[in-house]
Image 1 (cartoon, rainbow, N blue to C red):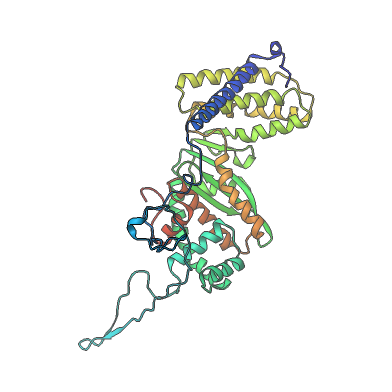
Image 2 (cartoon, rainbow, N blue to C red):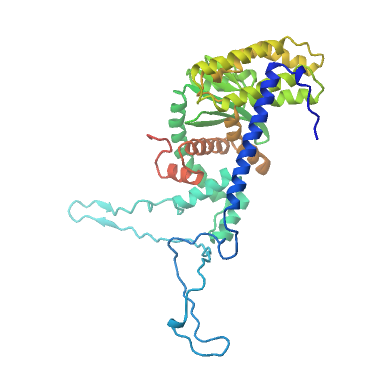
Length: 424
């Protein structure tokens, strides 16, 4: 059993954090007890009552009735039988391409001598033989599941009996790129009117050379671009003169100075404090981590708190930060953190003044996670246009998710000429 700490040696801030942690554990225990008590009142699960829900509209219903008694072979009529069981069997039928032959006629006018081509239904225009559905599926698998050209070609052949060469896939993606470019332009215009922007970047490889995948996002839109630079000029190019009110990012220098206010990602700071603790700092980093954890807990309630309450909490955090900054760590990592927060302490708690601001940059990291997966699976991009298409698709998919659409639906929407933005 863990030893009870000497409470008399804890500061007010540390006692507050300890009480808060105990209170959260107590609430979690009470919820668990309530859930267990509820389960005690429920009937036990058996093979008769634990099957999956039946489909509302089955495609086929099979009625199985006995013709004779299996014991004495006497004939059985419908009157002798009652329903014993009802269940569903689910299957996927073989998927095969549906080929539509188009025979288009040209009429020669006997009056003016001109030729008139017969109109064809929408979606059956001359050009590529592959439909929007096939193209949407190929883009979805390529850019959201990181399936290589070779594997994607085999997948279409083995699952759908559809022959699509790697060159054919490449040509399809090239034809689709303008659709996504147009939508990205609309999303970018929306970003350039945003009050809050969160940003991050990660490395990618194009033809063996290092580039950077930048993301700019908020609750409404996502823009991703891939550039051969990690400099602040990329931000200036994307924003094109727009200066948001609040910027959320890590401490990387190219991410600084782009807005009136700055919220430093607290998740990054917690990780750095933990590293300093593991590296031997027992003076500064542990207390700073406790303070940041208190701030994170407050951030979860920030939209529910009155402005006066948020100001009161911020004053307490600032006072406790004063006490922490007065410490003199001997460890080099503690010294580094102390110097960092001496410069940037005014940007730690921006979310308390502006509760619509996230306290961390986790949203940007989530948007970049598929990039890391794609890089590991495929090794990177072979061309600039492929990288640009990837960034465009990820921009559309990320924006669509904020408006309630899934990735495949979003891709299909764009290829159909519509927009994923609400209000279009």
